[in-house]
Amino acid sequence: MSAVARPHRGTIFLEQAGVISHDAFEGEQFVLRLRAPSCAAAATPGSFIHLTCGPGIPMRRPLSIMRTSADEGWVEVLYKIVGHGLAELALRRPGEMLSCLGPIGSGFTTHADRPRTLMIGGGVGIPPLLFLAETLAAGRRGGWQPFVLMGSELPFPFETGAATIAVPGLPPGATSCMTRLEDCGVPNRLASLAGFTGCHAGHVTDLARHWLASLAPAQLAEVELFACGPEAMLRATAALARQHALPCQVSLEEYMACAVGGCAGCTVLVQTPDGPAMKRVCVDGPVFDAATVFTA
Image (tube, rainbow, N blue to C red; front, side, top):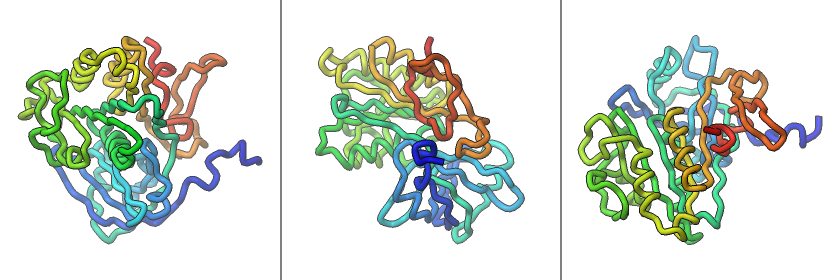
């Protein structure tokens, strides 16, 4: 079979990944760091790993990559316990080994003529946006102006604090941020319906709506949206993009069996130039043009 017919040949690695750290947060949320040097070197924002969870769990679980260090050879993921598999994964301790397949999928694509990158993450959909934001921050000399909005109904699984980077156009109650992103020079704000101090008391897309409405036409023409999270949030983000005639990329979450395109169990309906088609979230995505997935 030709290399054209198998575009993912040589880009996905199977590694025995050692658990470096495994930190628990409120709401049964966990941040897992794995030593997986081949995956770390090849990962891009929006890609994911397919990970074994433990003894007696035959099916792997797909987890979005949140951070990597190619130099140190590790990848980091955030997950929330949902089901028996992830409950078993939560029991893993430093020094244990897990079979890791990755990085998998087509990630986000940024465009230099749209340097105002608005990233919207919800719940366990936050990780790929953090990966993208930190990647753009590292290349700040390219003129990128990343802005991150995150929403959660659970306590955020990272350090938060009062924002020091001013962002015009936001509601006055939106004062809390992820401090690690601010330390990288990336403005960000948090939203929640759970009443957390400093968080916007509403949906994260409400913050996006306020910010977009505050921009002058020339500024708006430089905006591109990126989102990952619950379907309702993605639909609302796609609607905002349509309203303002902005490009928007969404990372979809689907149940996966093989995660390498063989089983076609994670297909979604996508509009293409040739008409409607079923695309595999694992290898055709997980990132898609929002306008092709959410048409109304």
